[in-house]
Image (cartoon, rainbow, N blue to C red):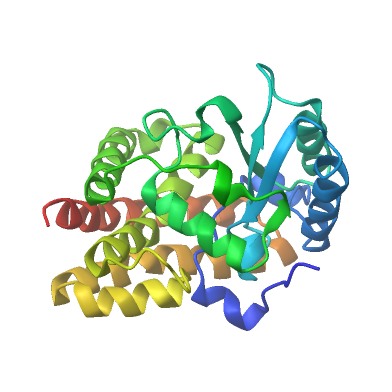
Length: 284
């Protein structure tokens, strides 16, 4: 079974999704047991599937930090020009339980090509850690998937891409639909820890990770970042922690006016400090 994170642990981890009020009000959020159901269905569908070469759970499903805000992350290598029908079946199964399935399908023809793969060096480190923690569903994913070259460029590229997107979204926050705002805010809340993780891996040169949790990122950042950057990371993580606490209360007692005000206020706080952090790391 997937280990579910306790209430006390939630503030210690990056938690992901930002919901619209309609999702909160209508309880279109995943029950934590639903993640176990999706894991079991993944094994039931993919293990006997002839065109699925290998598959791997990763992210919070493996790290033991699943919350109502989590995605369900996995990677699968497949044979043939079209994706196996089992992938669609699994998406439908997860959607029926409000679990956001992030299944990354990789065509076997490109999985082993460093010049064509979508697997970055940092993501490769993440996959190796997931495999060591028992995330393998089928086959030997690490023998099939080859990461692209250039780990020294990845942290800067990530920061540049996120800066461009957040700069584009920031002035438009006031005219976005609620769904657009929630999606943009989710990206802003996720970026600080993702960027810091890449920074720590690049600076430490440690590619055989034993951990990549939020607490590991924070400790590594203390060792390799300047005091200014450490302070920026601390400030940039606070909006996500505030949203998590407010969401817990809203799931118990939904209130449309206060929820939508909270989401907009969180976005107003998150965007400037996240951009400041990313620009600081991009300049390193």
